Image (tube, rainbow, N blue to C red; front, top):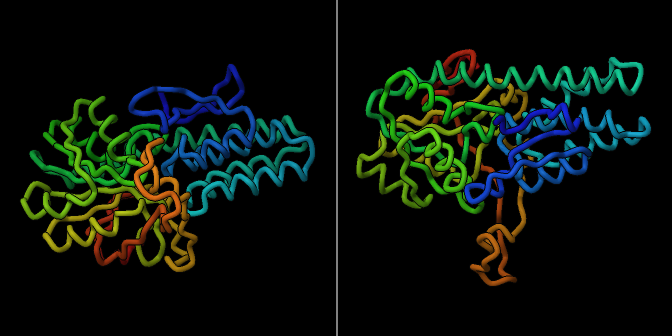
Length: 329
């Protein structure tokens, strides 16, 4: 099943609830914009490419349910505010919004927005396959790849970016193993990445985030590949912890790659201009429903960090591989 899609029978957004994995596999149906916004905020759907599709499908729901122009515009603005950092969300919203505006009636706007959203869905799969085609050439038979967070099919409609590179390499007969960092505080690496790779029978070893230096120094890693939530003119914004792994990879002479679609590029802005989402203290004070820190402790919980281009060996896109010093970007 695709991570996120349009369900024709129920005229709703259908998505895998990623907060339930790996214990339960549950599918959600969002019939209203507020339901989809809640799913985005609660990380039931996450990952830059998947958020792009969610944004486009959110416009479809807004066309379907809004009873006035003002209500429609308010729904679009609320959708934009659901997560501020990943540029694909805004990219998907804008594409479907422009399509909808060409319609003269509500039904026509909904039809046009849905056609654009479906186009984006199919593009996402094609783009990820191309990223895999290019990126797999960077992997050699026997490599062990460290990855952080989840940049697999659960972060996209299907196939994945960073994990898509690994999947393609395996499909071409290369033996690749993966070391997955748990990715605290919400454990997308341990919950999602390991689940995906085990489903595909790709060998994976789970480590805590703080173990990456040890495994690099021990020579247990040949490559590092991560995804990206936004690529700006001075570097890459991705899940918190990415910067740490990039520094360690440089120190140990290990190539550090980023795999991302060109829709994640925002080269008109620098890191300082981008709002880095800060999430609830509860994510750190609790692990699931278990309290692991004093309830009133002061918490700093940014969801993303910034990695400068100087630490990145190459960026893998559907248009090819860009290598440092990235003069072609």
